[in-house]
Length: 195
Image (cartoon, rainbow, N blue to C red):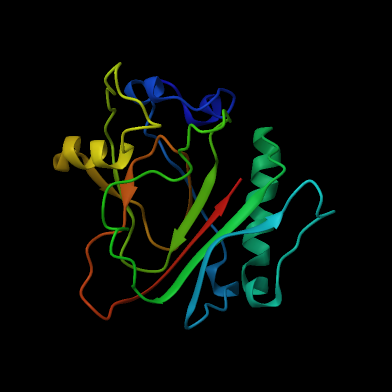
């Protein structure tokens, strides 16, 4: 099995899905320190780059600073130094119609790169992931074909596992996951810190 830490050292590629270990590192943190916003929606806001000379966290995201710094320290302990860090927040009434479909975060083959490391957290309605390897056909071209449609079509629903709410989980683009289907009007806080 190809473990998450080892996958971080190789360029992203579809062949790794068939041997990707699905073990997800999960750890608690002091969620009491979080002052969750009522309504905040942020998609991939850059909070660090090689040119930023440190963190560029706007006042609206200061509630998340200690989690960003905790994840950064964890990355340093793993020996993975990414110059770019992005934050996604969805806090409030669930709006997205496609997050409940099987997908991966950070999979793009347009530019060769190592896989993102994503730290995710939710307060309720736990994120689901598939404890399943996928064999991507040799003729599958991620520049022409939709990888998420492939996962939708080949997901084995008996392999669904839930990621515990209130814990920080480290995943990468080889962990296929989704938000569970929720009733209209559901309130949920989710954030992702991407390295």
